[in-house]
Amino acid sequence: MTQSEFRKSGWIKEFAQFEEAELATIILCIRSLVEIGCWSDLVRYCAYRIEESMDETLLEELEEDSAVIH
Image 1 (spheres, rainbow, N blue to C red):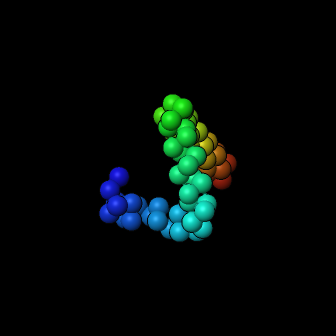
Image 2 (image 1 turned 90 degrees about the vertical axis):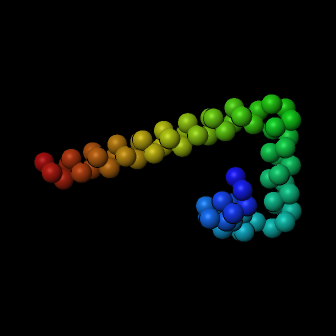
């Protein structure tokens, strides 16, 4: 992701809430995960969980809409 894409994506708002020491901690943790070879697996797992959560939310909304129709 380029810096321009980062700004446009809205992530800058998320990271702006952290103090410098907190941001340094986040970077250190990520670098450590990359170094021990866990980063890619963590990203895949988190993406899976996010997708799963979105699917569950969509299913709940569909069930609510269905209940209103009946």
